[in-house]
Image (tube, rainbow, N blue to C red; front, top):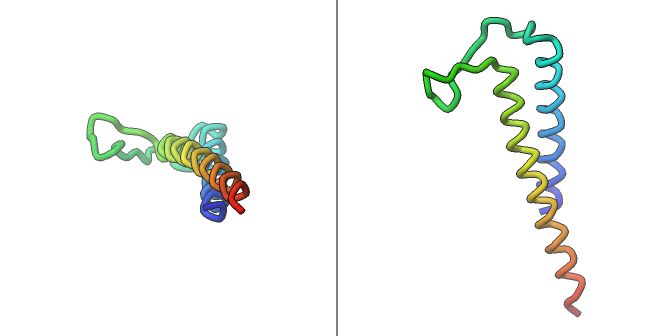
Length: 80
């Protein structure tokens, strides 16, 4: 579980960096490139915004995995 948490944390960090770079450059790298969010044609987002949303989900999932890994690690130590 700890390995998966480490990998998920690394991927979320990379996505956060890419999303922040896109936001700081005012989306100049992917200007005009818009995709619908979850297939809804009424919600068009830039790719940088989509990356930030995905990174946010991964950060939350990483935090949950770290909590579960720590809980499992502490419960294993109590048993003889």
